[in-house]
Image 1: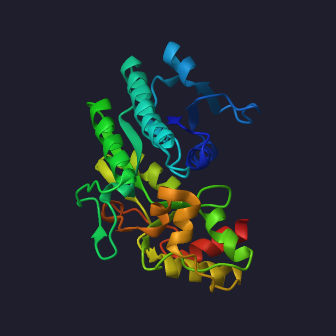
Image 2: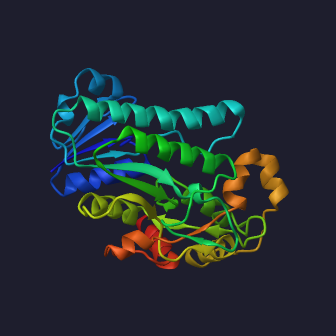
Image 3: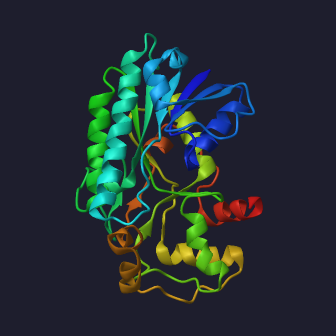
Length: 301
C-alpha cells in the first residue's frame, strides 16, 4: 500500500512512517524541508510542499493521506505566537486540500490531526466523540477552527479527525519534560493536582491511525486517548513509582503562570476524554493503563 504523511518528520509522523515502512508499505513524506540525511529505505521518500505542489504525481494512487502538520502549542502564547499557531494549522490544511484536488486518483481517506482541547476543560465532566465542541480558551478556539477548515477542505472523502491527547514517548512530546523534575528529585503535583490528563502511548496512536485507515466505518472525530485518563496527581505519583523518585515537591499555579504565561493553562486545566469510538469499532490498546505504558517506555529509553 501507499501512504502520504504531511508533517511526517515530527514526533508522531516519524514513528508512523517507520511503522508503515517496516510493514512493507510505500511512504511519501511531505514537509517544509528535506531531511539532511538521505532515506535509508527505498520505500520512504521525501518531498517539500513546494515540490509536491508543482508536481503532485508522486502522491497519485495513495491509499490514505495523513495530515499531522502544524506548529506546536508548546511555545509562549504571545500575540505573535498565537498567530503562528493558528496560521500553521490552517495553512497546512489548505496545502493538503490543494494536493488532493490536484490528484487524478485521490486517496479514499484523510486522517487529519486535531486535539482534545476542542471539548474545553472540566474537573468533573467526561467527554467522548459525541460531546459538543466548547470554545472557552485559546486552545479550544484553535482546534475548532482547525476542524472546521478540515471539514471544508476535504469534500467527498472519508475524513477522520484525530483528537489527540498527551502522547507519551521517549524522544519527544510531553513525557521527557514531565519526568525531568522527578529525575532531578523535585517531582510533585502541578497546581491543584486534580486536573485530568488524557494521555496515549506513542505506539497506540500509531496503531490507531493505521486502524482508522483500514476501518471504513470510522469517520468524523476519533479521540486518540487511552481508556484510563488520570489526574495530574496520579500521573506524577506513577512517574515517581516507575522511575523510583519521590513525589513531594508541588509546583504552585502562580509560579507556572509566571514562568510560561498563558501556556500554563495546558497543565493547570484538563479534561477527562474517553476513546468511545475506537473501542466501539474494536480497536485494542496495547497500553490502556498508565503504569505499564511508562514501564514500557522506561525499558526502551
